[in-house]
Image (cartoon, rainbow, N blue to C red; front, side, top):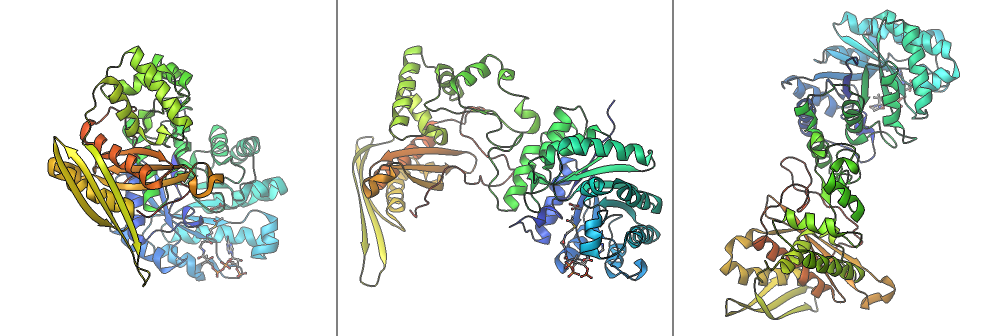
Length: 550
Ligand SMILES: CC(=O)SCCNC(=O)CCNC(=O)[C@H](O)C(C)(C)COP(=O)(O)OP(=O)(O)OC[C@H]1O[C@@H](n2cnc3c(N)ncnc32)[C@H](O)[C@@H]1OP(=O)(O)O
Ligand SMILES: CC(=O)C(=O)O
């Protein structure tokens, strides 16, 4: 039976030390609730003596109720030469509502000499007295042994004296920090084993790793396998420099690979949406390649892989995506085979025979050779399948479209588009203005279509991406346009490729509306892909080389 492992999230403290990471106090409270719902045991909410925003955060958190998580306040040992009971930041921690306080202290002689400028004995006193002061003030204390692994390699005996000082002073847990992220899994594993044995079970241990060698997760797992019973990390691995150990992957590995029951099955399903919602609050596009929770974590592109998946998903998947709240995706491209097309068609509710399947495959491969890329344009692909399956009804017949872009003497640019289309035998001629020619075309088209299919006026274009395919041809190059559209529930991608950017945009626009009219919502894994953040709009992704104003 595996020991219980405590999950300690440092997103709101160490995570905010990553470049560009910042949240308001209100947003931090929202993150804390998401972490609580996920099943995190301890949330390190911030460093209250650092700034007024952190102080305000703790005041707000005091008013909140959490189902499961405990809130920890972070700080450091007393300042050089200042007795603990006179140290201002220790008083701030003592006054803070959080029952649990994590304080960081030194263990490495390099830091004693160069940073804190105290001798070894004085450092031991700073550690002990700071912890004793906080305990007298009614706090439970976790001691973060900063740079522990560098210190242990430099002078194991002194590093252990620091840990013993913290344990004797009453710390309930000692966390071994790989602050510079300089260690490898075998070093972490053996050091943790020796520390756990050296402390003789008198105090529990934890692990706090950084990702400088891309080993943050592996190091954390090595520590757990060697006796650490608390694992610290941040959501999506954000944090100082290259980041902290990614708690999302740590949870995935502990639970699904190593058999530690760190979350319930219901909580584990929240892993993907929680990871994404935190990215959204931080205004960061979720990393599509993130293990367990990325949109590509269970995406299959190679035809041979998809054929395997159809036979038995475990042939090409290390686990069921649904367990972590993710979903499978099958990507259609020039690398697709027959099974990919059949699966995609089935997902769209279409029955296609072998001959139609072969035609679709030929078509996709030819179009991809010409510059199309169906991976990001699942809706255009579905229209292609519908045409081959005989289940396609054009929305209208095009007579012509025209755009005018005009700049006047004052520099003002105006755009206008006129379309002439036939719907059900009636001719519709519409002119509209827009902030760009594509926007004007879109407006003119919707004004006509909207009369016959009013619900299509609700379709929104949420992203417009342009890529020049053969750059060396300059202004005569072929252009690929990708459009993401949404009806508020689903998001779908369409594509157009042409030497003329407006013509490429028109193709993608028309596909977008035709898809909205014809396609029913698809089952998981076969239809349009979505980011799995609850209640938030999908984020932009893909190989954008230029974003052009429409
Ligand atoms: C490994 C970690 O991630 S620890 C957390 C790091 N996080 C942060 O630094 C973010 C929040 N930090 C802050 O707001 C500020 O740095 C503060 C308020 C903590 C300190 O600010 P300042 O007093 O201006 O000092 P500064 O940031 O330059 O830090 C250096 C001082 O801290 C002292 N110090 C550093 N670590 C410790 C420690 N563990 N225990 C006691 N003192 C320490 C140094 O001795 C130095 O003091 P000195 O100026 O008297 O020589
Ligand atoms: C405490 C901490 O953040 C570190 O040592 O990295």
